Length: 197
Image (tube, rainbow, N blue to C red; front, side):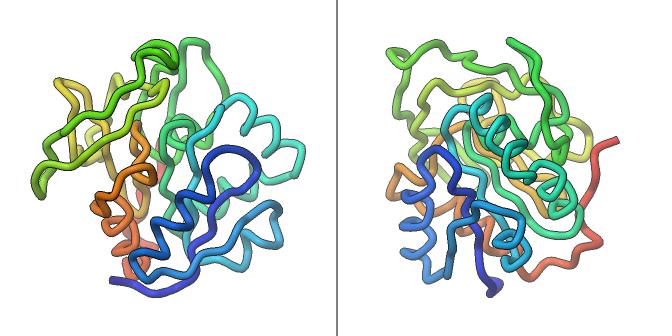
């Protein structure tokens, strides 16, 4: 497992739960609210929350372009709303994104809050618990994207180069698989990051 400081975007959403999940794995994390804090971390988690609100806050804090540059050389893990922000294309409705992973994401595709669920899903390393809350669906994964887990036919945990995206909330489960996989990317060479065309 790599070492370094993990930033957790703390503008909105369940960032504290991510910090606790990382701490349980022995990782150091800090909250990121501006570009100065972003420059001090080696990797970044974009938490769940409300992607439209997060996008507005990123723009307001001047973080959007800084995040895009950060992702060219350092690992980023987006969960739920964070996965939406990482996608190459977002629809239902369309919105701007960082385009760091070659996936197309449909927002709120599983329905509203009442349709949230906890499911056991299969991953490359065995079954894991996934908490879905107003989850998006990955409708397309590009050829450079590796699917690590599915819920039915849909990819729910993917990686491309240094980056990962989950449409569920791994921070709300006791299962450490997703965070552990992300921490392993800290030792990966920057050259393995693949941008989205």
